Amino acid sequence: MKPENRFYQIIDDFRNPYARDRDRIIHSGSFRKLEYKTQVFLNQEGDFFRTRLTHSIEVSQIARSITSHLGLNESLAEAIALSHDLGHTPFGHIGGDTLDESLKNDGYANGFEHNFQSFRVVSSLEKRYNGFNGLNLTFATLEGILKHSYPYKKSFLPPIIHEQFNLDTHPSIEAMVVDRADEIAYVTHDIDDGINSGLITFDDLKESQLIQEILNKVNEEGVLEQEEEIFRYRFVSHLINHLVYSLIEYSKEKVDNSKILCATIESKTKLPVGFDLKLESEIKKLKKLLFTKLYQHKDIMIKMYAGKQAIKGLYNGLKEEPKMMPSFYRSQLDSKNKHRVIADYIASMSDRHALSFYNEMYGKL
Image (tube, rainbow, N blue to C red; front, side, top):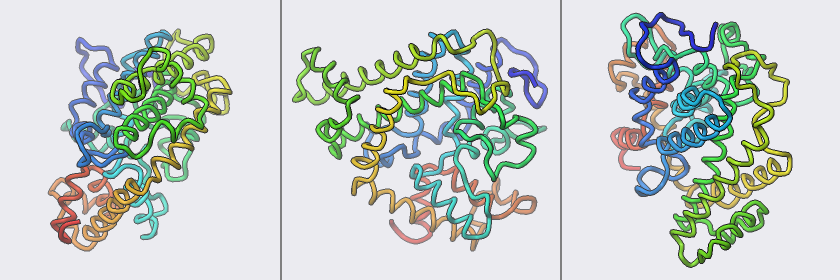
């Protein structure tokens, strides 16, 4: 199938195929719900902190900048970036892990995985057309969402997925850019949110050589660390610029931008998009540092534990009484597995919807 083709026929309009994908994603209900889904800090923590929506927008901006500079298809990267987190549950990764554990404990070995859930959202769970389910996105956009993380072959993927998308191949280079833009976005904005929240300080991160290098750039501007807000903004700006320019410099001679390459590059082939070995190593060290200092901070762990209990409670309550689900999901119980329908409903919830529903069931959490 050609990258721009769809599984269902479409009448041409004034937009290019990938811009049309982007518009369909932006106007979907699942995209709007990202506004109230956790990135690291629960949505109720304050207006400043990133949510899945603001994260997706930041990933899109970074991916568009990179693809534009590399001569790739900017609209394709934008569509993949805006949709890559549509399958996330409430309460961030802990919500998905808890839903996965709950399904597996009930004997459903395929469990739950947010990347594949994002694919399912745009290919089947969103209902916008009379004759079929899903948003009818192009092959290239669907492939980019499906193959967001390596390895692409996973035990829970049905055989038809391999038949349609060839999991032995890399996705488009635009999708590879989105994957790295995702990494750049969450590393930089998690530092920003973490420092703004007071959970971590720049001193906590100074054992990272990369952080030291960026702090030096801010200091060279004459911005004092005591000027907390402007110092933090300048730091984030320099870190994003450093990573973006480094990625472009490493990748510019390696990418083929003559056409959109879908399901053609062998998955064992080294990715043409990335950073040099030294910077890759520094990024890994920084992510490990963030995991220890921020993601496992007691204040974060308390909130995540509360989220975990909410997911468990919702799952068990709906399993016992599935009639508590809205009619859209109840209507699926005759044709689909009950546990999967419940998981789809919970995954679709925003944080505040999940907490409100949990409190209706069990009393205030």
